[in-house]
Image 1 (cartoon, rainbow, N blue to C red):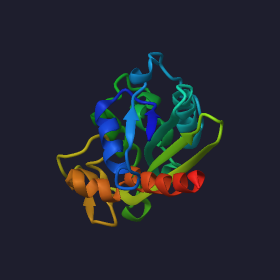
Image 2 (cartoon, rainbow, N blue to C red):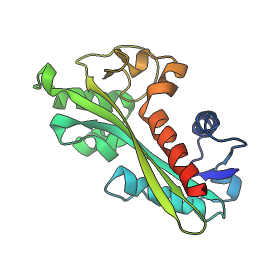
Image 3 (cartoon, rainbow, N blue to C red):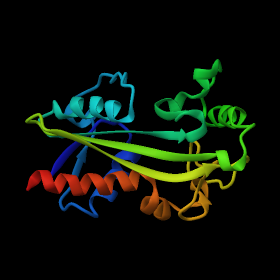
Image 4 (cartoon, rainbow, N blue to C red):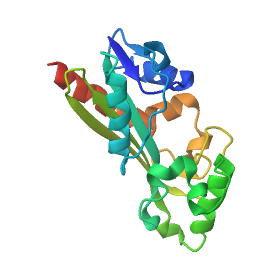
Length: 202
């Protein structure tokens, strides 16, 4: 079964193939380059779902089932920030740099006055599926936790060293790849996707 993921990132495609193969047999994940799409996709949605659908609709133009995802960190006390702007959060607050380090610095600065009880957060991943016949759906995975005041762990990327996952009592940066693939927001979204996809096939 062939899918086109709206991505050119080989690591992301490999990860998706690994996660999906636990639920679906004979999965082949193609990239945008594989199907001859070389333009940039403008993610101008206002929600994770909208951005994921924008990407999946582009991928579905290939004639295969299109997949798209959008993910980010949502802090309760910041009204859901960084949200869909997670990758460029620092740039939203007048910084010319939006590296992982700068995004983390800005997040800690904006949360500096919050008590421990006010530091609840979720990593969110929305997964969208668009069939060539126009059918489409989205699913969401949420990993709940809170934001620490300092970094812990050396793995992962982005906000992982600050995000303490309540379910495993570690930061995402302290998890092995195998552990993260079991409990992360992306893993939960893909599990939900596989369940919904089977219903669509039936």
